[in-house]
Image 1 (cartoon, rainbow, N blue to C red):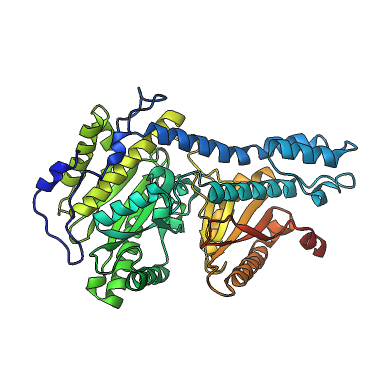
Image 2 (cartoon, rainbow, N blue to C red):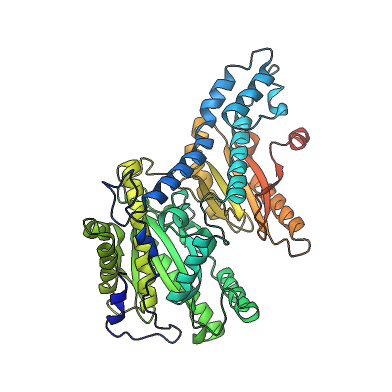
Length: 510
């Protein structure tokens, strides 16, 4: 295999908590199946997994169609509202075209006043989101659950690289919602993902998650024993636009690419310092900064050195690697990827980090081809095109680009900047077309903890009330609707609906 040669790489200095790692024959077994498929084999890069691309394409189209079909369907419904059997016709049509029925209480008043199209639109979005959630948890269409062989294999690869947990924070921009399953091609069951505006994660809460991880290693040997010299890998993914860098970059950083990168790096460094100040240098974590071009899905990885420092201007661009390796055989291409990554180290990262970065870049090559083959290299929706705002804690089921804008928060007051950005985006996407902003509130809980479900429901109600107060004008005009959901994170079960602004009882109270 292509990685055997790496054992001869020059000697490297190793950090105090960074064990030396070597390549073995199992590192990139995926290359054995690459290039054996037909559909795009004459055009694709030798490292592109055509089978995965076709599967991901089918899933994306299936899910996006759930939402894209809503407006055309409602236009048909609007022409039927004067028919004598309107309610029956509308319900049968929705079942046939969308896979669910419309509610009677939104249809039966059509003969008295005009049909509540805003309410119906929000209802359809919420029902589509529930179908997405049900399919994701019941069928695992992305083959990324924690018990899948692909997930276990990737976890073994992480461990062999010297990492016991991968914690990733992408920006909450909907154009990064597919980062794990598509852009990086990592099984979602192998990753801890928390999205934040500008990728500026909460340091204190991340330290607490680090503590919980290390506690599990001490008490339960999960994901591995504390005696194994592995590290916690924290990754930040900021974004930029190659097509329109001045306007379609990260809104949280004013579309300033350098600011987005430097702010992400500063947050990573502050997290590491917080851990080391609290638990000494032996508790050090590893850091990685990645940039994502939202027009092409190509990534650039800022190379860390052996002492875990990152130089903002020293990165490896996956698109450049793509061009340099596209005419090689799969084995030659994979070897070249490793050489490019290794030679980009000005201060010599440890082998484990080199292997991890090489794997991520080779994975991203499949996504570059995905965008090339489906969108001629660049997405047609360079800006936002999300379908709903996700508020709270959860949404493990969302892994598609421009499907959801995330506002990760415990309270509206605390998360107001993130939520305000989302509402501003949807004023352009929906309100400008006289359509409401659909907001799905989610709080995950642990069913192992007594009373956790009730507290999660209380959190939903509290956030829902705060949203109604903060955006009262939109709510009164029917231009913002909410769906309240909770989910037991300890089970493979979809989200549970516990309330909605479209419920009969809520509407009657008004």
